[in-house]
Image (cartoon, rainbow, N blue to C red; front, top):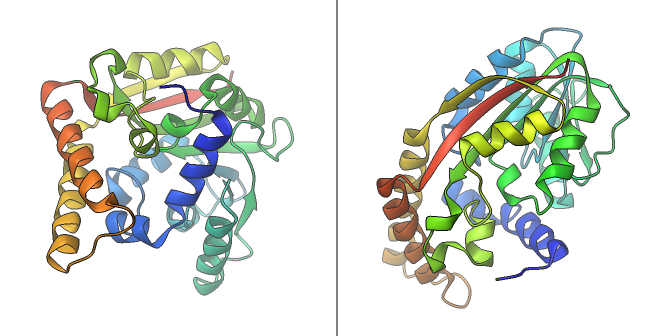
Amino acid sequence: MTIAPEEIKSCCAAAYSSEAARFLLGDSFHPGGAALTSHLIAALEVGTGATVVDVASGPGTSALQLTRETGADVIGVDLSPTSVAAGARAARDAGLSERVRFLQGDAEALPLPDASVDGALCECALCTFPNKEAAVRELARVLRPGARLALADVTADVTRLPPELTGLQAWIACIADARSLAELASLLGGAGLIVEQAERHDEALERLLERIDGRLRVARLLGASFVDGALARGRDLVAAAQAALARGDLGYGVVVARRP
């Protein structure tokens, strides 16, 4: 299926800024939750006085966690104005508005100067970007020499995915255009970054899928139907993703890379 890049961006931005996303995913919009985010933050090796960009920052959960754990200033960038506003509210409510700010922007054209940040975080988002090469080049561009990118993402052998995991809904769910762990490392290397770590964290995706499935079951028991049968389609997609994970065709990975 060929899907226009702007349609993908628009649908992903709308989906992840919706109340349904909050219901299904909670505050942490990625596998592994706060524990895996802490692992990524530690890999950045930043502290007070540093500036870090969180690309596809969503409601701001990881950006706030990053500044709390390191003392660094954080710039969250997200395509959705709804998510940007939610992040700003969360920073204000936490008393961190002076340390964490949010900008609306496209990951494929980050609204930041060259070599302007001391670290970059990108969690479970590259898989949704239509032009992954452009997004990775942008991440490399804004890093200062010696700064690191900590990236976590769904991994997949897309040649082995069933049809129900290759359409627009599966793309929004971070599956249809995911790459293998080796391909992720190659993408970062192709942007001039030096890959320092590449790890599998498939169990994090397994736990997230179980949680989403449980919440979809609760929604069904409560009589919710969401929109145009989305509840039933969501349950079918989760079941297909769980089967792909069990076969080894789907997973979750972390790659840490440094700009020379």
